[in-house]
Amino acid sequence: MRMMVSFTFDPADREQITPLAPQARERITELREAGRLDALYLAANGANGWLVFRGDDEGAMRRDAESLPHRPFMRGMTYTPLRD
Image (cartoon, rainbow, N blue to C red; front, top):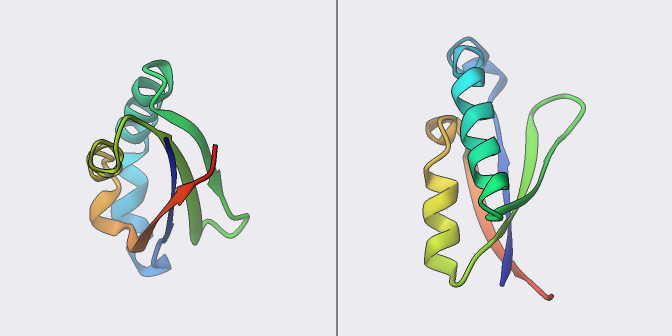
């Protein structure tokens, strides 16, 4: 099963988000190596993002999304199951 997570970042939060980049890269690498994150896309302006998770169930993929260091700043998160 796969799920797309869409979100936005508020530019006003940039000063708080930037210092979290090293932890975010580490967590994203862990999820990719575990086969639980297929893709991460960020818009050119850095305000919108999309993640594609892979997992056994929706709850596990939501927990993976919630585990990201930037999560407190990821606004308007939507979870969309994808066809395989």
